Length: 99
Image 1 (tube, helix red, strand yellow):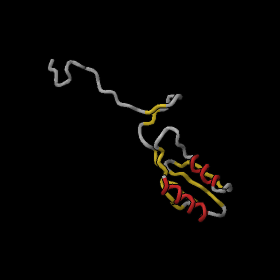
Image 2 (cartoon, rainbow, N blue to C red):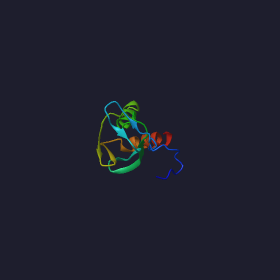
Image 3 (tube, helix red, strand yellow):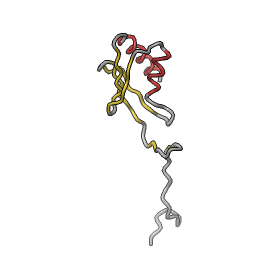
Image 4 (tube, rainbow, N blue to C red):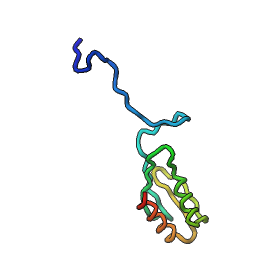
């Protein structure tokens, strides 16, 4: 058997992954396109285990918006409002540009 620069070490290199206490493993960043009433307003990338799409809802509530619904559709995060859609879209544009 030929030793090709591994100095006799037949072990494979360790590849690090993030995992949480529930055994969930995050291999890549998750990215979602965010829409308000069907209009694209920006992208949200979940870079760490602690980030969640509900962070967007929390941000909107902190900004004083409460009359909206949201749901995930594949890689789209859909926010529906009956009014104030321009105000919410503007607030989210600021949110995405500051992240």
